[in-house]
Length: 159
Image 1 (cartoon, rainbow, N blue to C red):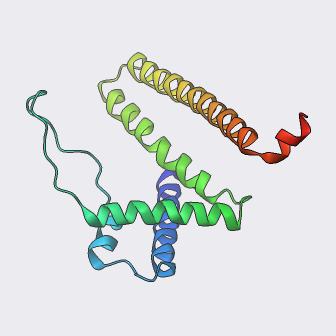
Image 2: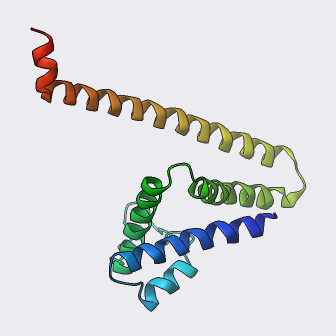
């Protein structure tokens, strides 16, 4: 499958899951929310002066779509934990910015800049992966300790 087909497949999967979750919640997606899903925003508004924040009005439709996406992901992981559909969708959409940067920077003909950007992107993603694993480990250890302290069974075993 090509990059475009992969991206289309990933996006249609995620949009379908969000729409299904909306139906399950008892409130189907509105026309505005469907439009938002079909034309997702690609960037935040620019800031002209770094000290003056750009105020963005609250977007209730976007908030609902995000909440439905999270609920759809959690529901799918509970009902079918072995499925790799979400991982595929995440991988394809995560790869898209890297490819875009490489294409843009390769326009001047120099190969060193895109290779450097690519290696830097891979290094950053690897460091983020390691950091997330460390955070998960700390959270798990904290949860185990919390449960150990709260458990009456552990207290009777130490006597």
